Image (cartoon, rainbow, N blue to C red):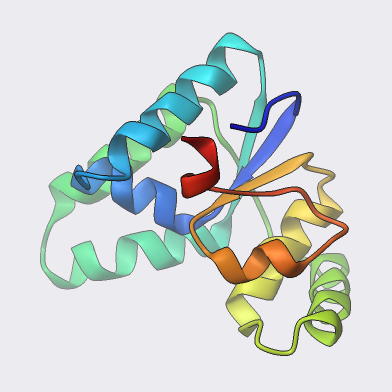
Length: 142
């Protein structure tokens, strides 16, 4: 478990695991949120997370899942940040460092960097190769 951060950017996967009740990862995500609340960590995600998260439930007419996601964001006061030109510039810089990085992942990381988040919570182990960002995978939190 890595601690000491005061702001955290959440990638999409932790939200999916928590709301879908993933047997392995939901308890870890819950623990991370409890840690963040008890240590006054500012929680952030981007508009891309809402796109990634809501697409499948809306296709399947699962408004209950969308409502659970919206409630979680509101209850935990998670700030949803936009993807701006400055975020895209950060994303471009990151994509030049990690060639396997997909555009949407680089924009998520670019948002985390631009909005000065101390840590990024994800389950994408590839991202740990980026040295200038504190990437915390769910496996590392155990």
